[in-house]
Image (cartoon, helix red, strand yellow):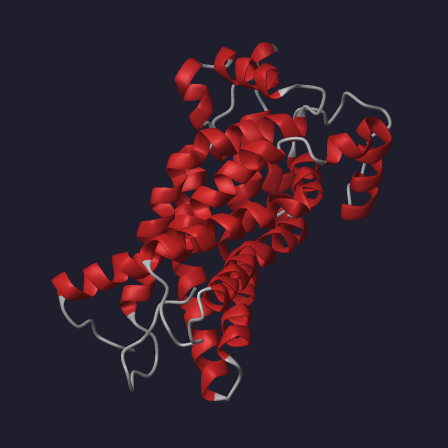
Length: 301
């Protein structure tokens, strides 16, 4: 998963930072799937067709890009850099310590996910969900900009408020990169390749697709995150806990909608997970190679 460094290179490469930002900006093309996933997770009685109609009714094509500007762009331009830089450094450190390459890569992916969650994605993911689920404000004549909403949440609940659901997000992030790494290892074994041999383009895309799809097994955690961050039902359901935690939110969703409710939005999330993982795990290496070839050797810190 991590981008390879030049032999003998120490410290980090600025190209890892650049590639991480570039590739995650590309992943924002999947925002319609993000909106649809969030719509279904927040409104668990809706089918995919009903959710699509609801999003379309909020603004046509523009409705499918709610939360893109500025929050998805802020998230994308920072989380990719954090992920690839952290994962690369952890994997490199583990390798130098003699850790098996597979476990070094796994540690890098998980470490990158942790850094993503707490450094950049907590507040941006929260605000994306808020933007997608606060449409009822307009219906009653409340007009607030996205930054006014952010500041209102911050003044009322502090840093915890704008990072609500970050622990759920962390649990979700820890899996996609790990599954992609596991899929790569399985493909190497199936083809009789050595551990150090590089996979071809199609094999990397296949591994990323499998990893992105398998990582959605934790959809209940994602639904819990959306419910914790949603503004759609904050005052509608008397059974909804006043102070939401991961566990009481999980119990609330299960009581209200059963096991089926915990997997609402899994189909668009599978598509989104595949797209994001292919970008960040497969294409990133090729973008890095192109970048270094055309720009030349970059300075190392």
